[in-house]
Image (cartoon, rainbow, N blue to C red; front, side, top):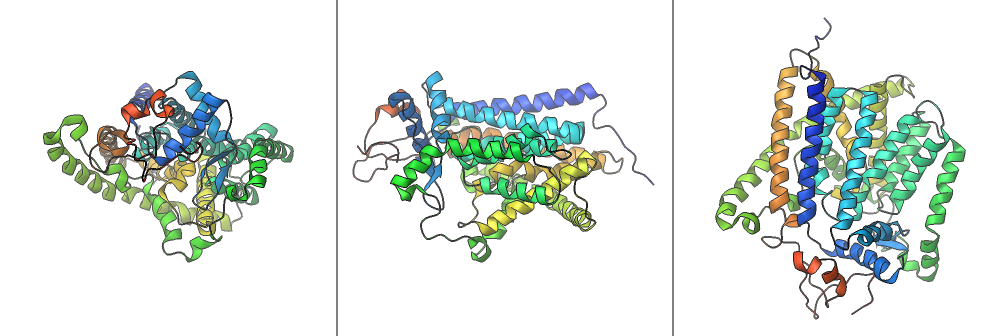
Length: 464
């Protein structure tokens, strides 16, 4: 017998209100995180590039050091860190731009799901992506890896536009998203390999002229970096004796990628994210009660929440393999195309893990965090339409939402990145004082003690 469908809520306006409420709740928590964010080495390296732009009117032609050695190509990092400081000379100004990138990425993907699915898919995605602590935790502080979600979303949306015909501007934006991401983080390789696989399996059709324009624009933007590399070859990424394909031989490297792609839609977080200390915000008595309670609850929720992504992938891959064997490329229905795009992109991500000269780390999949959520959306949305399983799924979603909000609030006030002081506090000793620390408000709100004997120093600033 065919499945009997039931509405997700009784009236469509209620569904739209729920979507708006979820977006505003996540935005409010992210703004609290932005106001309370702290800094460490990577953040100060970025602020140093922004400081040079606003104080000396110079653009540093390379980004942060990469895990494989050298520096990221291009000057986009300096612009993203420095231009917001021209509007508001405060260290939280570039963080607001980071949050804006995350919000734009979500809104773009939400519109895509409105075309490929429906309101159920959009609500599930809002819960598992926008209200996902993995996403909002990294939207509230400055880091180059926190910028890559927007290029990743553009890559997905333009791929949808290219599923039927090779449009010029969609092809240009699609390839440009890879070029932009390459100037921010080495995880751009995931997008590059995904595009190759999508094109080879006929899930996208690229306009060669549009792609060529994107390549030309990217090449022009990295010319200053190329000139800097000619003067100092040590800036070129890939040094340090690292070899391609390390992920195939390094213990746990490839499996680490699989593990994180399962964790991204769940509530199973990295230890640094849940090192709670409520003392700075609420006092030692409250911390003695809340810290172990919330940490234990977060761990329990994380373990239980892994069941959904595991079941979602168990359903996704056999169907994808059957369609691939039948030679199906560009799917006619939006849901089928989204499933094919998801499986193809995740396969490209695993290929990137295998080829990577470094072990897979938690931030290297942020560029396709939304794609890691898609299997959950594809799995749960049909279940909501059934009379037998629909009520159970709704109760599970409500529990997951409540747990996400509690954990997010705990992170906003007690996680090391969002509190000044306490256990495992984010602090970095510097060799000397610097005007940047005071004019941007870093010295007043963050822990940056001066220790000339063993202090650290940002790579872009002249030695003290």
